[in-house]
Length: 449
Image 1 (cartoon, one colour):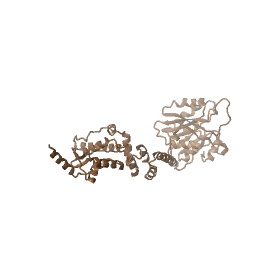
Image 2 (spheres, rainbow, N blue to C red):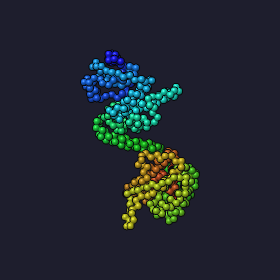
Image 3 (tube, rainbow, N blue to C red):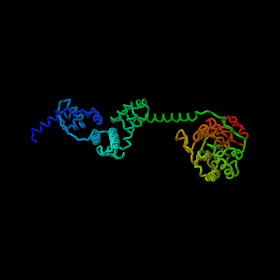
Image 4 (cartoon, helix red, strand yellow):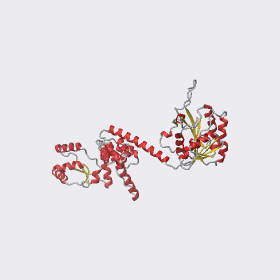
């Protein structure tokens, strides 16, 4: 081709009015004001050196260059591309943008997500039509997509979440690199008004992070309080106590009918043969518990006593078990000379093989150790030397049962656990041989028979 023909061809290309397809244009990240001004200065000084890439007269790359050339009546060159359809053109546009270095993490992930959706839709359509058409290079896994985009698939998921849940100002800030993706995805978990209040901290992301942490802590606290209130939003029943020996009373309870065994039996300080005592009542009591039920058995912090109960309990493979601990610091007694103060008690915790998950309101409620002060005689609210705090009974009942469930305590003493269960509208039953202790249980609201 001679120079005259070539010049004529170029002139014809420059005179062509190109089509701006809004869907194609939307796939290309917009330039910042500074970037646009720099490109405009360059084109005005040196001309449009890079061709406008087109497909059938539609721009697929070079939208900004074309706009500048049109505004200043400058000539430009075009480069024609061949695509089988719009999907292939869109895949090419996205791939080209991903190959550029001046786009931030959010935009890269945004483009990768668009490519993922495009490939998925094309694959679905091809399957429907029974054809083998492909979009650019097929992407088979999240890992391949992330590698192609240069971002992790976790970042792609985070950006999708920000766009789905974030207020427009947050999305704009993330796209403009005013806030990191990792921080934006945390902000978008809040309600819209809260998001708007938070992003007012920008561009100080450190300040924003502090506010997010404080708001999340407050929301977690409120969620725990609401869940606890919901657990306690029940009717009330009346616990019933019987004056009877545990070995006489337990046989009156149907086998496999109990949802929770919660009890505090006499300790080795009061029982001479703790081994024989544990072996006498534990098997009988466990036979009453459902395979969906649970047991909390308080024992003294004495090696011999713990060993005695462990020896009995390990024979029951129908229950899983672990050890919990309760400690207190307000009723210590005399200081021992050679030993350490045993200001704690062990709790054998058992659950049936079909027991549901614990209904704890927070992770801290599931700690194996709880420090809760014992009832204090100085306040006038302590009825017995080994009386347990109401709070621990309330907590275990909430964790292990629902309204209407059967809770038993064959060593109910002053009735703390029975009262806690009844106040949560459980069917609460227990027994004790100590008439004085039962009198205290009656004072607390139990019906004694």
